[in-house]
Length: 199
Image (cartoon, rainbow, N blue to C red; front, side):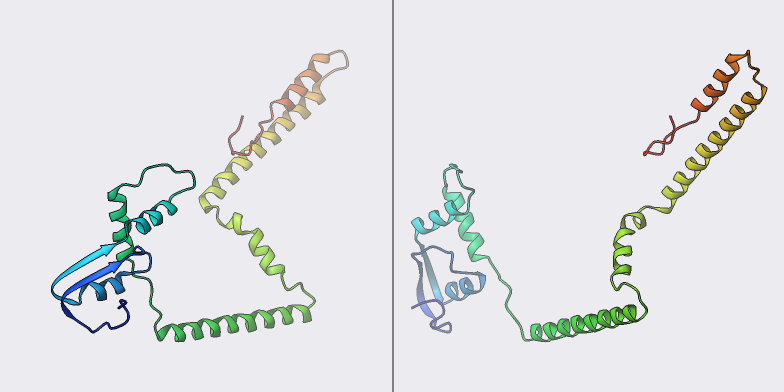
């Protein structure tokens, strides 16, 4: 008889034979098969099927030999599986998920209709939110640090331009070095690199 044929049948001695390996059993069926005896139980498993299952579970080209420990690990993994069993409450959960999706769809359709009536693009808010996602992830203190560095660079640039302007006013036609000094002042303007450090 099979494991599922007569689950309530017991005997003094029981033989649990699995000639095709342990791929078809789980922790639930193993409990039924191994608890039918009163005094003693023997478990027989086809080694060829178990070895084939272990070999097929490995990557293609893996030539590592299959040992008896590998077979025992495969057997324990199969006999210890406890797949999820569907319950009646799952139907209620599916119904609630369906209702949530329907409410979300109705809300979205209403917002799109209102946007169209106001002459706006329905997806504009979503696009703006997606575009601002990277900016919103930046911490406020990082923005403050960047703002301070930009203001510092701006002040330095303004001071250099003021010094260059004063140098041009004081230069005479025969004093070419004054023009060079003004140009040098412009070249001394600090640059802001993407990392926020000045160089």
